[in-house]
Image 1 (cartoon, rainbow, N blue to C red):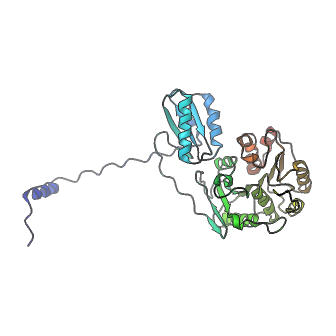
Image 2: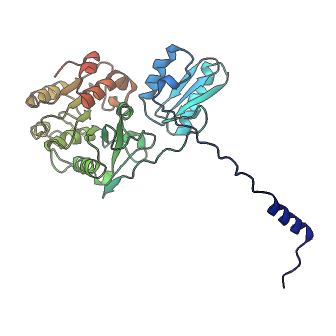
Image 3: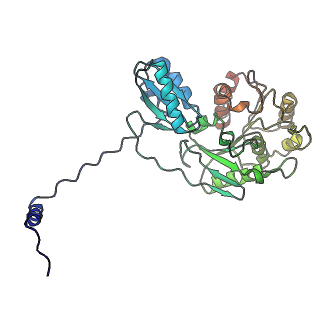
Length: 363
């Protein structure tokens, strides 16, 4: 026998039966996503701020852009984390606005001016094997195989795990991402990262495998390889296979090599150039003054122009650009500001006009 139900409970139950169910609470509609690339949508305080935001877009995450009530703006990019980028941008904004209020407009690749945007689709899973992995780095735009293609970044050997920024793509890669290319990072474990002979290495072996996977498993129609130091050498080495790459960019990665301990002959630059078989993929090589690993840029540039003169594809050698020196100069903001458009338009579009505008002579 059931225990008696208290009268109040019965009345409540009867009332619940007598009253129709209220309409469900309205679900707040997700805010439409505003593209971070849409400069016209930014509430900039003046036309003079437009090129500032345009420059912000050419730099990678972690990044943030803030706008002040008094008309001042501030931004940062390449910060240790997204939180650090936000803090720096807001602090800089308050400083230029003399402590007047500031609001965050963009964070990484998201516009947050009117609150958090609707969730975006997650990037695809990557791939890998013993000693390497391939993935989409956080904070990049994802276009999918219906975009313009993929840019595959291969790092050098100088960065230890404690210094992940040394392995991240150089700032100019963000320009390719803005232009419709997905960014993929090929990460190698130091213990597996070795040379097989004076030309080939674990870096170019994994780059080839990654490029094939991007085409066959992900459906990209175009794959551009870019890299710094050993990563740039690997991009050039992969040009011994016609049609594998749609472009190669070597930043401080092409030239007559001298090891940190002074040994020569460990790598054979002439043999690397002689192995090139791809006749059409655009090539950009960048060589800096003051690079202890590639100390003879003039000789290296001349050898490259001579050895690759038979090809129909564009060749641009940015040789000893003024104001940029050292093995890591390709990561400097001045390099991106001056040559980023050159690399994008030459490799992605076959247009050398931006290179000429940057003072790069034809090869």
